[in-house]
Length: 169
Image 1 (cartoon, rainbow, N blue to C red):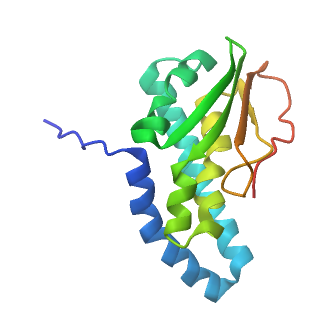
Image 2 (tube, one colour):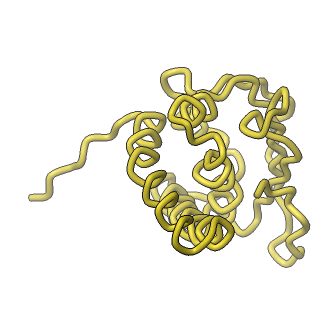
């Protein structure tokens, strides 16, 4: 008999992670330099997000853009994100995030400089892990001071090369 781990809201999970990872990254930055420490952090976070995307597709039993759109509630739960859907079809999902409590959280924790690495960059790897047929383009984020985050997902042919995604560093 396996015991199921209780699921906490994603915003709360990110806070717990940030309170642990933030000081560790700062310590590594003091030893290795900020560029190297952030590079390592981004690699680890991307790997975790890619695996999370694959796990999500497996749990949904499909990796369509429609299934992905249906899973957005996990990121929005408890008002963590406020968004406006611009377009939602079988081939496109476009929305703007107008309030991001994740960004607010990192600022409140004094980790605004780490927020993009701990949170925003996950989105690209998550989509990649979810499906090789989904591409994300984003040109701006609230985390980095924009008025909104512009998420543009599209379904592509599997052979289509990955374009510059607009990934935030």
